Image 1 (cartoon, rainbow, N blue to C red):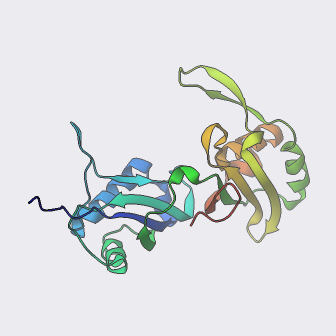
Image 2 (cartoon, helix red, strand yellow):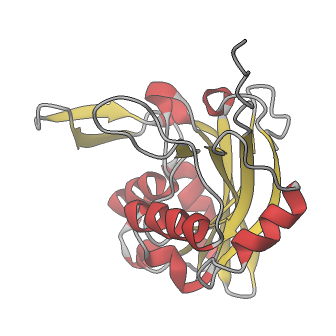
Image 3 (cartoon, rainbow, N blue to C red):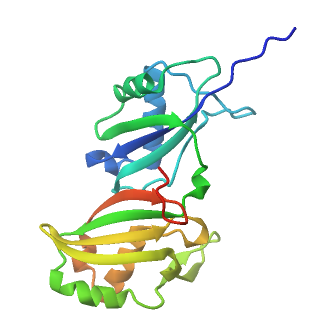
Amino acid sequence: MNQELPAARALRCRFEKCGPIRYISHLDLTRAFHRAFARAGVPLKFSEGFSPHPKFAFALPLSVGTESVVELADFTLKPGFEMETEALRAALQEQMPAGIRLVAITEQGEKFSRIAFATYRVVLPKMDPEETSSACEALKGSLVIQKKNKKGKLVEKDISAGIRSLDFEPCEEGVVLNACLSAAGESYLKPETVLEVLGNRLGEAPFAERGILRTGVYFEDMTPFC
């Protein structure tokens, strides 16, 4: 009689990425997580084929320099390895570099492809609160930018479809831009692109210095993804 192999556990980690570590690349972040698993003695399941790799994936990788309080990573443990999720979180946290805080580990739920929107808080210390009205006007109507396509050719793209909401408000540091942007498909939009449009229309000075924080990810109906 064939002995049935234990099932591999598919888990999801929610974590924060803040401070100087925001300047590491996505590849270096992946390596940091893989090292943490290895040092904690937590074996990941590997894919099959000619080039096996750990079954590990992030949702919506951040641009270099962007912080986040709602990052997600899915991973699958090697069949037979068992550890309670809170103990697993604590073991991995001990091996994480400064600036990475593991909030929780749970069973995998909805696929990352269901994420439709992401929210951001962008601090603009060089922007005068008196400039918010002109900034709002600059973001009305079509917002055409030039970007390279897969063939390296410059093409025009209207990013307005990727904006669900934008608003400015004064703060102690200057001005805050609160943005809800598309996180799916062809309309996927980064806050850096919105700031690029503003810089082109109003001058780069108010937007050259900024601090970007991702604050949430949502389904199409704007219920929180996690």
